[in-house]
Length: 468
Image (cartoon, rainbow, N blue to C red; front, side, top):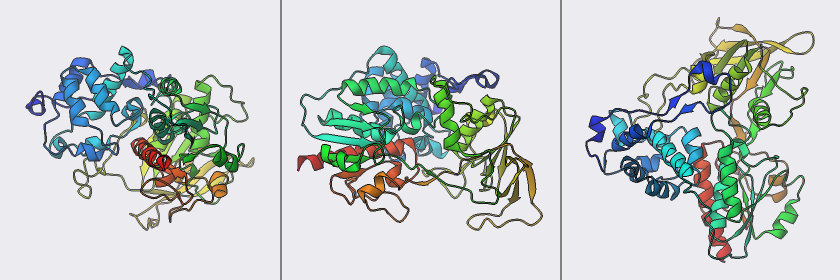
């Protein structure tokens, strides 16, 4: 490394966040980039550890020490080449990935880990600003046609890899814009959508065709798709939400997170959302059920709607402030995390279970009943801990149970695993020859880096299949 004693000399610094009072009044990204000179010093903290566990902490196996060193030296053009060697879209991961690489950083054993995510974002932002990111077109085309169903991170990563290998790739997306949950799920305050649009332009120049409002298995028959393409990749995600089947679930004002969040993306994009379809938290007592990232996204969105009060429920107990002993380095640590949305306000409730929704005379939710519970896996109710909370809007953000089965999956007849995900072999091919799968549709609800890693690996599998 360029500065072998850097980890002893410099303290960890990360990307900042705009003031709460400012950012709660807009939908722009909350981040404030670290100045270039400070970013270079963060690169110097990478400690030439011999065995860089950050490589395996990241599902993309990013060459992290290489580009940390290049950033420290100010060799940004070489740094983006090293970063792009394993990661198609660093502008996505550096904004919305929780950075398992940092959890696996060797320095993190006894010091704050290297600010990998901050350095990654600096490299990719620098590359865009300098105009270094250009289309990478193949020298020749194979003539093989590949359909990618789904335009989330798995589908986009696979499509780009396949197009660069010379195949003729068409991405089908059932929504009206490309991006999957990146577009309609991730709030703009975490990732503005021009990042997707820039990559789309690059991919179009590389030969990728995008088709929106194209719902395979509904608008377009699976039979026609199989007939037109030599291979098909299923990358439609795990969109079936986990429901909460308790008394009163039918009341108005109770919505899945993915009914609520996309509407804001649409309005921010300039679309008109009819008032009868709009879900607003303005002036309401909001309860978010689910303590993960999606719940935090609902929290930040509700803040910007100017909710009266917001509570976030989580069935698990409150995690410790520091890494729990049950998750030692280099495992992903169980510990308290505070997203930007939590800085903005709201109350977090731990070890709590909703038992009933209470309605008014017009069939609207007005409250919910909950009880404190013991530890997993039984979550036994604690007698005498019952409580009722005012609630005009309830958002269910408890995760997803797998891909939607009706339509595409049923018509293809692909085999499912014991968790209800699409089953695939080591080359990511399903039980139907020529049909592959990747991302959340194959592995279940997961991280953006896992989706992209799977998309890249599935592209390799498809490439080998098309050689036969």
